[in-house]
Amino acid sequence: MEFIGEVIKYIALALVILGVILIIFKLLNELDPPIAAPVLESRNFIDIKRSAHKNIFLKFLLFVLASRILIFISVYIIQILLQKEIISISTYLQMWFTQDSPHYIDIAQYGYQTVGEERFYIVFYPLYPLLIKAFSFLFYDYTLSGILVSCLFLAIACLYVYKLIILESGDEKLANQAVLLLLIFPYSFFFGIVYTESLFLALSAMVFYYSRKKKWVLAGIFGMLGALTKNQGIFLFIPIAIEIGLNSSLIFDFKKHNYKNAVKYLLTTIPCALFPFVGFSLYLLLNKMVFGDLFKFLEYQQLRWGNSMWLFADSIEQGFISALSCDRIYSIGTFIPQVVFFFVVIILIIISIKKVPLSYSAFSLIVLIFSYSPTSLLSGPRYISGIVPIYIFLSLFTQKSRLIQYITNVICVLLLLLYSTTFINGGTY
Image (cartoon, rainbow, N blue to C red; front, side, top):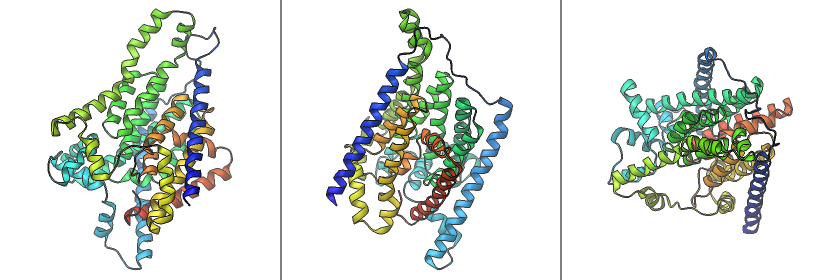
């Protein structure tokens, strides 16, 4: 089995290298437009009228609430069937409030602590607990506030994924399918509980949307907030920087040796791409203020969770071996999907490179690699769920036929119920 694990490791490595090569070729192609390229972009963007934003958002908010309730009820019935006895609602609710959720609530209530088990919570980024704290002033309950924050930002994520696709293609069916896939993604149950996933998803979607619209300041601000939400947030500089660099007017200026215009443009836009680093710097400053050490979170990641960084492909090999040796619930809920989802996503990235903007592919590949690089990885598929472009890649794939779309949707729903059930039983992270 170790030999098979090695083979899987090198297949993963080869696919990533292939993805990198294809992205580089696309970059070189986009940097070499015809010399007579117009100064203005040739993309024919379509945008949603402002008057329609509110109605679309309310529709998505309704879908979010309905889908989260359906998940809650369906998994409750499944759990009763598994245990062969009635479970009290309070007990069932507590089963959802597990793993990282109590840590976010603790930070929201008491802030970052310097002693006891709570001192390790500095590894959790501050924006989500801060929003829970703000909501608690209105709803007087931290758990309820956390759920409301998650559901609200899930609706915002749906809105901006929809707007992004309408902006790119004007294809409403494609946009609706992408939103549906977002809501039924196998790990989307994390979007409606006390976790940061929906907040990060919404902020990422806004970064992509405003980057494509060349509203650099807004893109930068949301990138900075994303970097205050999760460690993957620092990579939100990538779509902003790529969209700035591939602006046809900039490339045209360089081609025509109009360096003054090009430098002026870069000096006024590149700072916006650096905003995610500002967000990360604020998080480091928080470490300094609480512990007197900018990088205390790295020490605690290693000390409490045994996490450092290594080659992402080693996590694939480790996941395969763990899937064969761990208890069934951990194999089904954590290690098998950790391996399978990596390959599904890297293949989606590769087959979508020619169809989507370069910023989508580059961001997705880099975040996928980074997310699979921790030495004690348990949450690979959960990290994947926060990569906005994968819903676009998947919707483009399902567009090939109604049968593929139907099968994909059914598989997603079944896996969503499976992983929701393994999560409340402690088998999914």
